[in-house]
Image (cartoon, rainbow, N blue to C red; front, side):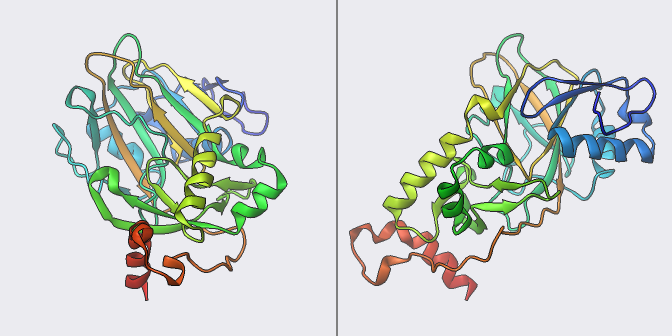
Length: 297
């Protein structure tokens, strides 16, 4: 049980990872009171990922639960194969949907999701686990010189994995923690394309290091699914990844709570790197950034 948060009667909390992740039992999402939701919010802020087994909500119950945490939106680019509810995002692995790259959801948006609530509708007996990583802990473990460098930089994110490369935005490489708990390393291998203030060669080198760094086991938790489990995670300071090591059906349904506001930890002073005043054959790597900046003028 958390040392700082008082749980309602019959609720039980068990940590499953040293860096993040806890299992919360003894509750039913169909019968929660307002104070119960406040407790869940506090637990999520502390543990970053919460697992609620044995829930199996209907789609309407799932959506109603999500609305208690904020405004919901469906996925902007991916249509559901089976479910038609506008607030539900479904991934059916039997149709090829496996999120097997580390990512924070939808960072190509100027205001990405605050949190996500996933319902494991159907899962294989073996494989298909999901991992999460703690981005605050990952940043804190960097050396001071690397921290200082990253705080001075921003990165371009786009929706190219969804075949929408024109959907772009820029976020700081290091953002303020939304709850004031340290700083957050905010780049991911799925949506982050380049460091804005660096040449493509420098950017590739730094991004490769940072996106591999967050995968270290020191920062992560791994969860084996059971059907009917709900997972809630703080999308502002975590990444997640699905292990593509299974056969058969794996069906998830997710509601997404929107409204994140991203702020850098310090004022960014370096200018973007766009061609550096000269056009060469390699300038094509700068075109997406140049196009984004031109539209913002």
